[in-house]
Image (cartoon, rainbow, N blue to C red; front, top):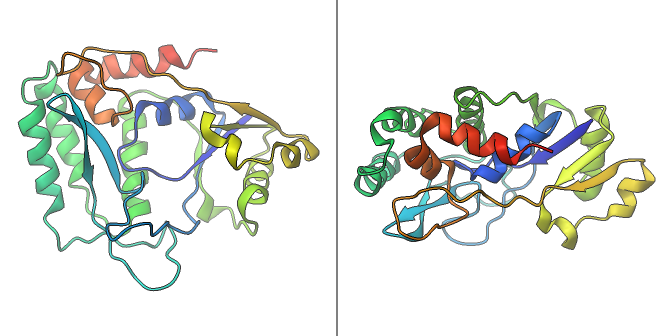
Length: 235
């Protein structure tokens, strides 16, 4: 049984959905501290890249910065900003000539306009709605519902155990901070996702990787995006 664990990202890339499709249990890591690395608090939690004239450019959701530690499930969206309309306008201008614009635009707008005060709630709604629309079966849960007590690697081990799994799937870049020996001591096998996206026809001449699922939806439609995820997810 494979358990995958990840913070709820903002309109994540295809690799995020690949991880969800390949796991038996998926846990949104929504009760960890949110990084404050810049004035905009920019992380994968509140921004993602799309294709703007052949280049990777960011769209983002503004957050309210407060003193002290802010946790993912409590951090507030700055709903006084007109960010939703700005994101929709950016997507409309840059994807209006995409092959599946008419098929997916209203649906994407509906997700963007979802009314939420907390970032965690907003992102989880987006991701789980896309799971249903793309016919991806996934058993998921929030960390905040699991009553966890540990931190760092011990937290991940605790979650895997609570989900009754014996394998933990992590991203290919986890070597730098994952203590594999701790997992092995608890008889949990660490497996690596090592996701490489399948190139698809985009709005630009050259393929730009690492973009939001939004890009795949505009360029490939619902069925095409589902196939991209499931073809790569076959073992």
